[in-house]
Length: 119
Image (cartoon, rainbow, N blue to C red):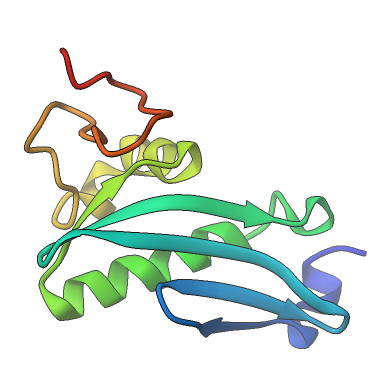
């Protein structure tokens, strides 16, 4: 089953501090964030069922979070590996919401940090 063949059967919707992808048999993906402070979100988890990877779903989920952050005037710390990779690859697309106060790829809130807080 490819994403394109079943795109009409997929729905991305907001649930709390997450965007989830719902397919015909339930949830197939999610991207979550938590608050670091009133103006900063930590994008901490992205998951997509292997069956749906490699297409446009993960970037679309990320774009939903980024658009919400822009609308609310928030910054994002890309703490999960997927989000950090996308922010690094697309600084023109995400630079306006990218919180880098504590280092180039600031994510000191994550235990899986790409850059340790000591740097």
